[in-house]
Image (cartoon, rainbow, N blue to C red; front, side, top):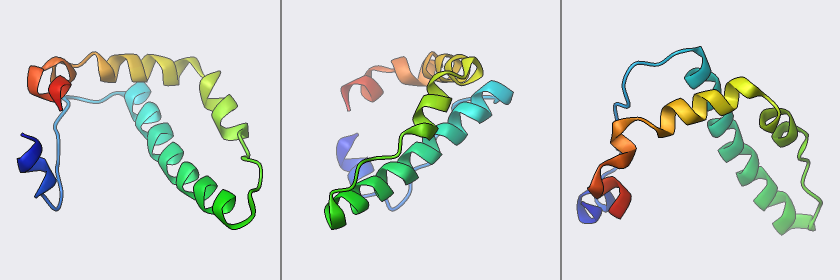
Length: 85
């Protein structure tokens, strides 16, 4: 499976139906990726301290925790080839 995914230009995965909690969790994950990329760039350019207010807010939001729990407990994440990769 690793060879298949490594040669793909894009991979789409269907995790199942969504709800408000999962949507919020996905928004936080996408936001985290973008902000971590910016943090790496800022640190590389001037070694500045990270701004983590967004992380603290997400960490304290119970619906984000619930959404992440719902998402990562979907059957897709327990399939052996997913765990293996």
